[in-house]
Length: 447
Image (cartoon, rainbow, N blue to C red; front, side):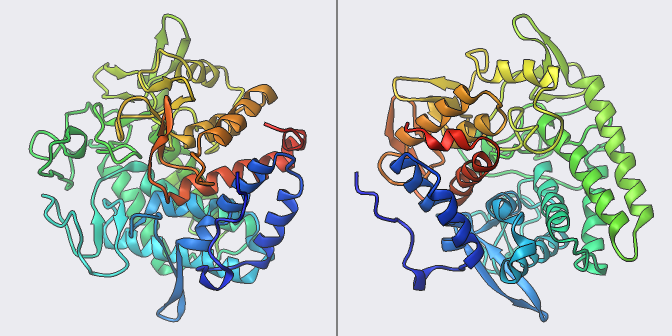
């Protein structure tokens, strides 16, 4: 196989960081397997190479991040795409400025509409303008997903931890933080369904909400209602457990950041912590199930009435990814039971075929495993044999493209979706950089 770089020529890259280039070169030199090294070289800088648009808005840095082959910015994807670079922000002023631009752009998006999941760069309108919801031309899509707002908080907290900088916590950013908490509170639905409605004319049931766009009913119990999953597919039972765990963690991260800001916003921090405690208690009371083979574990969705959906989806937050997001340690007993379920045929969206295996989901159909789930399996494992198997599978299922994809057919990796999907690419890069730090011997093998 030709291992020539698949990166754009230097003059055609959206952004270049000498520090990231040095990390890329040093890490690549430690990878013995030539094809794995080539994948890392192509994937790790893919977000910076191809998806970021750095500029100024009102005299401050402003960064718009497209997902790849979809020319729009998702709150979730934009955080996940730049996340592997956050650890280096304190060492590279230009990279730091780029990340500040993402933080400010995300906060402005929240102020524009906290229920939207994806945004246009300006008031251009788009393909989903006819959706029956409070659509506006700045929005690419308006699917309410709890994790979208969690990712906004994750990036801000991660940037602060990497740099010590809280200067972005100004009046505008605080307004966004208050909006996030208020939206979460509205979607606990103690006072009714709140203002959000969504319907789409479609043949795909996963792309719209029933009952006049309100969605199926839930019994308020402290959990936060999510209309859609991080896959952008509609929930069946709308208390989405992984997203509620993510909200607990993100709210506590927000509180820590607000305490550190100058001046601190202690009232808002207390409110965030109180909500986190409430949601955490509701998870313990309503999201635990006992499986006949796997024991006590977490459901994927619940409704507060006592119904539970047992599955997992490849998109993050997922049950598999909860330790990666900082929700609890990977050796947590209940997580281990849940993980065993997720990675077994008992999960209806765990697919295994002649050429690969992994978690998928309804979004692109049956027998389509997501490389993201294989990366996440490795990132949440301390078993070197398991991690090595994940690396080997990622190597043999990229279909000669040199990049990760959204999903591939477990019986034919040449059948895949999304040739240019920056989140999956940089997540793979994050895995390799993480292994270089924590298990370098795995990079010294051939696969």
